[in-house]
Image (cartoon, rainbow over all chains, first blue to last red; front, side):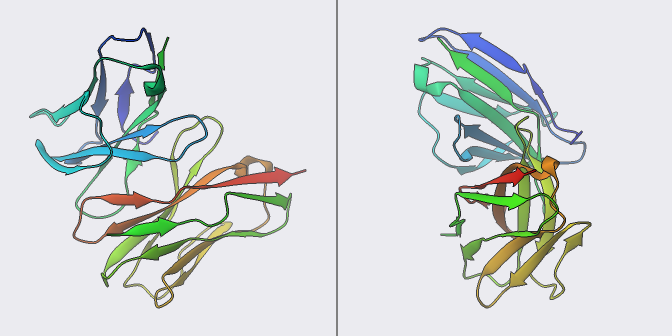
Length: 111
Length: 114
């Protein structure tokens, strides 16, 4: 158990819909990262927050947005969903130095 | 920009044998971290080993060890006495010491043959 929690574990929805994925980082970790992993693909970095502020942006679509709240949990919002958005979405957290710890992921299926 | 390259998309090893996974990276920094993560079929991302660039000694965690060649910007993972449970996708990752962003390679899929 990495200490990073993600909800829900699975999400099935239809094209055009909007969903919210939630992440709680490890206690004491101020940085939260979001990644997308499609089937048999590598990790695509989406976005990073540090103590409530956006720090880095990767290949995140305009239909996607995220935020980090004062209690440090983070939410990733995906809207106008398309079939190609079906993937495993990981949240990870870290301290100022050292490794990332990953949550178990949310498996999103868009039908 | 930092890049991480894993040139072996797939590797296989006989059970109980040794295998080495390659990783190279590009950076102008002198102080940074390197990691290997394992992603088994469950798809959970698990940290295998980490190396601080300022440390000359190669990191070791039980059957897992690295060969860190700083001048060559190479960071390979050696798995000794391979076990069936080692079958997974392995990702190499880089992080600047003072930075926040992590950079991942594209992964190497390891098959362990009984």
